[in-house]
Image (tube, rainbow, N blue to C red; front, side, top):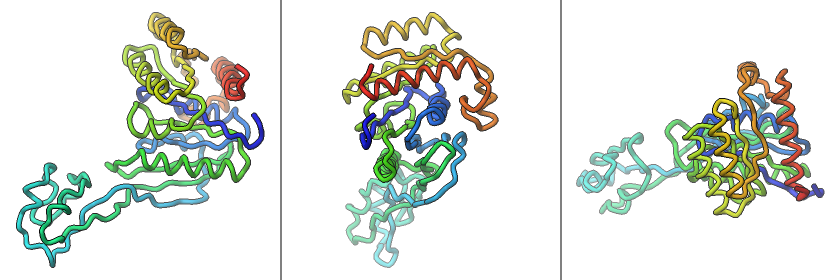
Length: 293
């Protein structure tokens, strides 16, 4: 890669539990001159393998919640009547039920309700044995995770420019919702991790269609491919038909689970067969990012 040319790789999956974070951590151990970011802010776990040392912590205010001025409130009951979530009763707000839509503020004749920024979680800049790492922790039951993904990705780009790094390695969230869209925007390559199950195939098709929508080149890796060779063949056929390169097939290997239990990446644990496959995959990904494949 040319100096100062920042490439971005997003590792995603249509469903959870396919091994996405396991591969992201392995590539973090293999890649050079990079910064990592965990965009699965709803259920972040890449930090468990990278073992970061936190350098900076910032609060994230991503939602809004109503605050009632009880001196102005006449308890007319209008807010209670219009709230479809049953989150306010004569000026008393139930923060668990409230969705932050702000309709109560608009309807209040006394202007007794104001919408205030709500604390939604924290985001961090850390150092790891593999390089700088940006991650976040969304509060329990909090929403607007797509906005938080945008925050951590923006910070990651700043770090890459500041430290003259040429790769951003993104551990993306599962699914195809708002956090995934925020994770994919502007990336150079998508690596979709799947498994040879019916749900894995279904959700792989969804994530590849999303990648195609944003016109992002995609690659596919089948994890635990040998648990159902018929479904693996179906995935390979789908990739060939739709122009997605099947870059790797990883067998089921109990040592991978052992590595995770020890909080180690697969590269840092004796999993020789899987390590060889991952190394070959990473070489192919690097060549693609450099435009050589």
